[in-house]
Image (cartoon, rainbow, N blue to C red; front, side):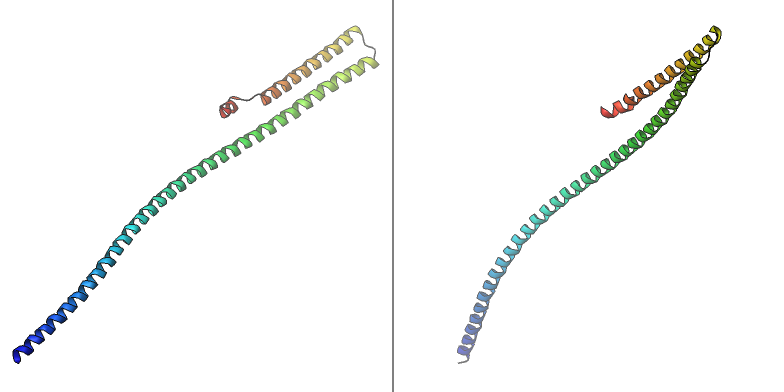
Length: 169
């Protein structure tokens, strides 16, 4: 009986080991399936990471382009401000020159009118009359010179200078 018990015990142990082996095989199969799922998830995550990195690089390039555009706009704005300041100075200078020329013209016109009135009211000798007419002539020439100055000023103000032509090109 001892051998038979040993044999049964051995069969029992072998059966138990066989059951455990089947359970291990099932567990191995489940682990293999889980491992395949993890590998697929890793591949998907790697692909997603690559896409995110590409998107991040694209955004970084767009950000750099935006910064460059901003810098260009800031520089262009500064240039426009400078040009506007220059234009305002030029306009102020032109206004000042116009005021000076207008004052000169009024002075010359007043002299001519004053002498004309004197000639009307007083009786002068031909020599005195010739002197007075000489003054009128000189005042008229001064007035003509002032008008010429004004015309040149207006012409230079209305004509674009070389710098304006360069900016328009």
